[in-house]
Image (tube, rainbow, N blue to C red; front, side, top):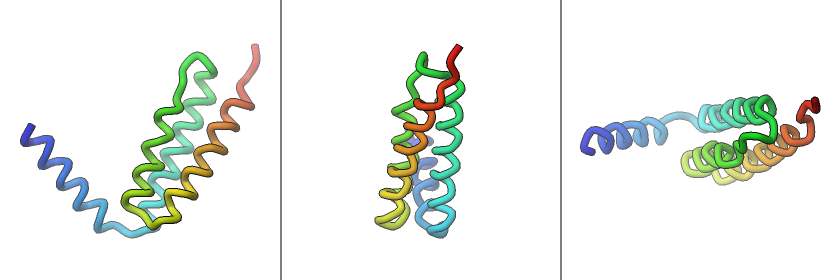
Length: 88
């Protein structure tokens, strides 16, 4: 348990130090990857929970607006992944 705590503390210290653009781009890339996986798997597997991680990351470590922007982008990607599901 002590190792996990020290790893999380060092990760937190790193995320606090990096720039706002980088903190915005990491969740954006993660949202796009989750959206692609959500699209490829179709309605059989739900990826809705995975969209929350980049929103939380950008809201916690980014600026106030970063979390809002990432949440709107996540909702759009989630909707697009559901609308454009390939039909068999």
